[in-house]
Length: 348
Image (tube, helix red, strand yellow):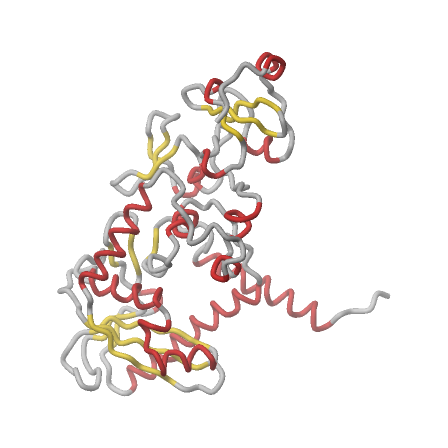
């Protein structure tokens, strides 16, 4: 009988269970919208790639358990705040949707209508985070703005858009109560943050423009050794193979985000694409040129297909040639033999 690795076996099963639960709530790799939690990221390219599902980030089961811990602590902390007299509502499954545009939106952890010490009658956005001891100390020493810019921009966006709520009418809220729970020793940090209208507008406008940008924007650095790039989940795409392996409507050259909040396909008469279908795309998928490292051959282009050189072969990608999946799998069945033989083509 094979010897069991009890620790490994149990951990893997728990990781699989928690991952399934979290994905049932939200697939972190394929969100339909661009969330306020992402728009404060300092790299335009990172945001653009995330919105277009161009890189599948492998998230370990351990990280999904961290996500779950955040949900549990948020529920626990909300109970504490209500028990000490804060009028906290719209938490958990009752979170509100605050919308800057059809594509850019957020969900604050809650709304405190009254009871925050020092401003008992004022309404506050509520945001709750967990942190290890080192990060918690950063909040205490430097405050949210200087320690975690992405979170600071997230709450600024929530405040700015608080009067644009899907579920109910609300006046604009210009304060946030930011809560952090220390996972090591149960310490709690609270900070009141005021609305910075100009800052919120700048990041919201930037996010909206990235939704409609057709071309891959620049990254933080062209140097693969740059420390922020080395820690990024997009490093392999930006500094390694520079080729997406994700076939879906967001990476397709024929589809685009419309300002009415729909994703549309030029090949299918500009019809709106259902969200679930966007995740898998169709057999006529054509990679956006900026998402692959293949040399372009414009003379092979057709209305809804693009010409590339892949593995030394002249290939049409799309409806009039090879599917993206076949090209990625090395199953190139349709080659332009005339162009391949004589090489009389224009190459970019």
